[in-house]
Structures are given as C-alpha cells and as structure tokens.
Image 1 (cartoon, helix red, strand yellow):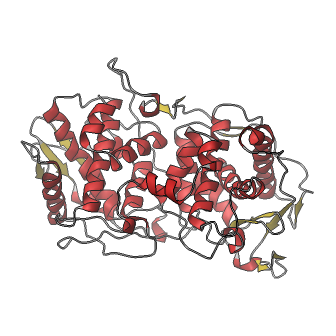
Image 2 (cartoon, rainbow, N blue to C red):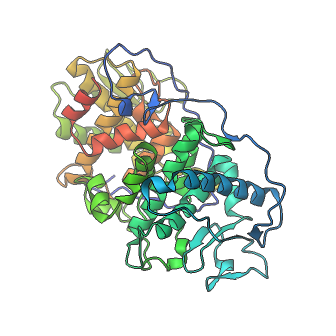
Image 3 (tube, rainbow, N blue to C red):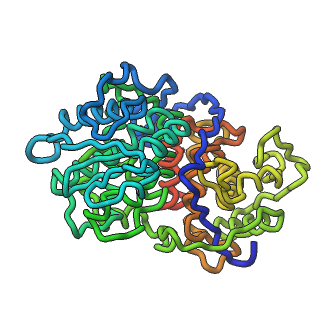
Length: 479
C-alpha cells in the first residue's frame, strides 16, 4: 500500500454469493454491569439472540394461480408463500402508521428471463431482468426472476432470503400506497425506505407472529442481511418511480436502513428522507458512499499492516502502543486465526498469508460475499483497539468487550476516513468491505479470546455506533 492510498471496493456478480462462514460464537458470562438493550451482546434490537430453526413452518401452496406466467414449480410456490406472509403482516399493521386500509399488489408475475417468450411488463423487456425482482408502480405489478435470482438467493442465503427480497419489493408497493414517495423521490431514499419496511416485517417474523415462518436472530437473520447487501436491484421500479440513478446506497446504508425498521418500526421508515440518511451517515465523507468510483487496492503485506498500526497510533496516541509481529513471537495464533492481540506482550500478531486471503478482492470463482483490503485491515484494527482497552483497565474477555471492540474499530475507521494526513485513509467501498467482514467472520466484534458476539445485526450496530461517535462514547456505552 502506498502513502495515503484509497482502499478499493470490489463489486461482485450476484451469481458469486456464499454461505456465510460460521463464527463459532462463544458463550460469555456478563459481569453484572448494565448494558442498554440495544447494545446488549446477547440481544438483537431487544430480542434474544436465538439460534433455533428458521424457514417455512407450513407446506408450500399447492396452487400458484395468482401468479402470472408461473411454471408452477417449487420456486414460485416458495415466492408466493413469502408474499402471502408479507401481505398478512401489512394487512395487520398498515393502518397503525398509514392512513386508509391496505390493498394487496394487484398483479404478481414470475419470469424466466432466458425464455424466448419472456413477457413485456410495464413497457420493459423482461429478458433484461436476469437476477432481478421489481415493482412497477404504474401497473401495480410485482415480478421476480424464478430461474436465476430466487434459486441463487435460496442456495446462498437460505429460505428466508426470499422473504427479505419479497418484503423489500413489497415495501415499494407500500411506499406508493402510503404516498411516501412520488416521481421526484431520489432512488437513494426509495430504496432505503423499502429496506426499512422489509425490516419491520422481519421483526414481526422474528418475534414469532408469522403463521408461516420462523426466523432466528443470529445466523438466519445474518444471511438475510447479507442478501440485502448482495442482491441490489438496479432495475427495481423500472426507473418509473424516480430518476435513473445508481445511488441505491452502500452496504452500510442498506443494513442501517433495514435495522431502523427492525429496531424502531414503520414510523422510522416513513420519516426517511435525504436529511435522515445524511444524519445516519454522521460526519463521514460523502466519498465513502459513492459506489462506482473505484480506488486503488492495497496488497496485504507486512509494510501495509505496519502502516496501519502507525495510522492507529496517530489516531489514538496510546501511552504504550502495541507492537506488530508477523512470526508469532510472543503471541502465537491458533490454527486458522489471521490476527490476535496478546495482552501479556502488548502485541498484535498477524498471519500474513491468512490475512491476505480475507483481504484479497473477491473473485467470482471464490464465491465470497464481498471482501477487500479493508476486510483484513479492519480485523487487525480490532486487535489493536484491545490494547486501548487494556490501557483503560477494562475487561477483555466478555461479550461486552466484543461490542466495545467493534465500537472502537468503528471510531478508527471514521478517523481513517477523515484524516487525509494519515498514512492510510479509507476510500469508496471500504466500509462495505468492513461490514461484510463483520457478517462473515465477526473478528471485528470479538473479544481477546476470539469469542464473537452472536448476532451480526448486533455486531454491526456496535460498529456503527463507533463510526458516528468517539472512543469515550464506546467506553461509556460498553462499560
């Protein structure tokens, strides 16, 4: 990595998605200090962090007569079951926030984009909708690609990924019905609002209210969130609802919008506009949220990691900065562990080969969610901030320590995004690489023993709290 480079975002194909890596979450014993329900390492926006079964609890519907152009197969029947559940949710809760009654989408359409007779919908050639689902406001039509998108979503993100997809597209229909959007609404707002509305539905399922599905709040919810990151829908609404734009929001935007719905509810979604999105982004530079502006990518070498520690020294100015070792001297690493912090020697240890594996830009043949140099460097930063905690005299072995570590890593990332005079600075897409790593390996939200906070949702919440706060906030929030 050269002086003050911009770390690169790697945008991958939807076809190259992965099953999330198991994080081996440890069980912690809390030490009796009060922690906000929102930031409790063993809760998810107030709900218990559960790891039970997820998916449909009833048979798929026998008939798909309601779905036009369907082949009657299992994929369409699964999509219809998800839609019926989403409609059940809105039938019960629409009037709690919006005026009037809820009306289901008039027309559902299943397409095979590769078929020679693929239908034209809302004036659009659906052969161009491979790997897409969409809502067309002018004709009140919700459609999906049954041949490519939905099977891939199920394979890599689980059955509940279909619910997340359909809840998002149905969110667009709810927007129109509730008059939350019009032809001048920016795509950035309409897309994140739909993510938020999907989050309100997912909360309903996670609470056990759905008559058709269950959703645990750890692995299954994490996979739905990963799907929200991966399966962006650049053709959603056929550009009929807003001006053509690629500004759908970054992974951090989309996850935070979904979290708003899951945590707060539909009122948070109704209040979303550009000002609210800017507020959620805090003081982070706008460059970080512009997709499609590639930066340079840094190789994960000893020099790069040493430069990172120099950067963190400048950001935090600890009395006793930790020392970097790459040969495990005084700080051995467990098998498969890319980085660790050893309090006895105040050492950050890295296995450069393993670190490079998670820091190499994703390749379709590797079938990974999203990764790049900041996936690796944010993990190393999380081990560095354990030294700050040791200096403060707080415990390093607990779920609270894992949350505090994620928060402090967020502070580091924020400073690296704004400090142009630092040895390393963040660029476009780097936060997405970090967020994806928090979901897939969880290192950023782990304690000194490597025990990971169970829910990716909660891990990201802690990380985001640091992005928009400072180190003192992290120590107060996670005592």
